[in-house]
Image (cartoon, rainbow, N blue to C red; front, side):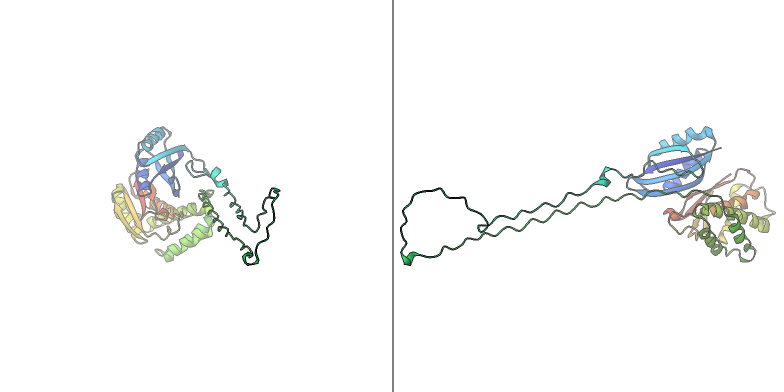
Length: 316
């Protein structure tokens, strides 16, 4: 198996994660994680998928034929390595633009301040003016025009918010064990403990710690309530085991092999999905009940990224 990072650029957000998730599954891969971010260029989608190396060309062909994707890149995924999105806006020459200085207004000279040119020397006879005709010449005044207003400076360029992906860390096992130690008495009122868990661990360990709590919680619940159940098909296992267990925790609907979780308490913060808890929970809860050994649960979309509901797709 190989892990690949797919980066894609699309114009619109609505339904993008669901449709790309279907392409991933149809190409023989499973979705490991996803991120969707708004950018001046459009919607930047980043997904990490896992599957057989021979299926890579099929995945690339499916993405290339999907009309909503403007461009994309597929590259090997390295755990812990931060890779900027290829289509994200970058600072360029326009960011260094400095508006020109305001023009200097030169006052218009008036008659009082203008020095007249020296007159030519001409021999003239001086004739005295009669007293009744003598009067002082009235000075002439000229108003200077008001200075033109300085042009408004151009708006400052807005730099795009850079995509910062925290370094992925392993789960904080002591913190997870502390939460699970209270399940025997508090279940199904477990979300206050899970919210405390996700805010007490390092940011990079948040998703992995929630997934571990889900896995161990799902295994614990199967042994407690569903141990006699085994040998079921996937659809039957979802109806008999998955739905009753989830409905004790959240509001959920089943549509085929997808589960739509409404108003998840773990997915209220922007770009902070808590769906890894539900994925781990279902894999360990349904794994012993189904016939197949290849049960896979992945998040197609999450309301922390703008979706109406958190959608989990199951395959076996």
